[in-house]
Image (cartoon, rainbow, N blue to C red):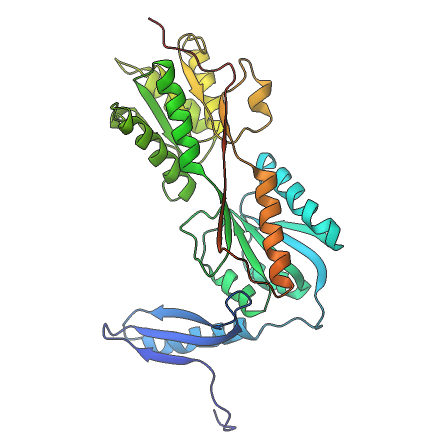
Length: 347
């Protein structure tokens, strides 16, 4: 630099020819170690220029600081696609922890946001801490928040948790195992599975749990009876169940990735003239309120959304007080709720 000051951030050429850009971003509030924003620029004729531009961006991100030193007495909850069946109980859990500490609770849905990073908006408000829900760590936004000294916990991350970022989840594999064992115990052997998108950690865990239970029972999951949803949506259950029920040897039971898919599967059975549970057993996952309202009431696996929100908020509050969490990954148990949508298969 012309004024003689040391340029923060370094650009390193890797053996592959790519350039690695690394910028110092302060002390991690959890590990108390130095934290860096790091990105890689592919080799090419514009690599040097691109790396310089990226370094400028990262320096700007690392330099973002609030206008006032004191933080707002608020816990912010960031959703990626805010669904009431998940968001409301999570917020109730966060509020239960926030209120005794005289903290308010705010929230934002960043699914359709574009332009300015939502992390910068949060930093401008300087919250006590942030809980992200259904985001895939690590992201640049997570790094920006950490660089700004804002305690961060991710709830139900979509990908493998980045352990320096504390996370809270549910025992998805164990829940799916319990659901599959329930169906096996009723005598079902042709069990179909409708999963969520494979890039979601919970979807993979639930499929693995169902497969493990069936393998242990000596009834391997038939790949022809597995369908993958684009999302955890009613339409996924409706369309995939309709397809499975049209097979020459259809399943006698369906294990669905969530309750919305299960409700869609029930509608597919109704349209096919099948009775639940006499002709088809259906199991969901989540235990959202409509699961107990529909007829017949849905057998499902309950996720402790309120407790998950409270656990995440408790970790954030502890971090804000300078107490790193004892564990960087907390997994809460799920519970099989047996209702009226499952029964032994017809003779």
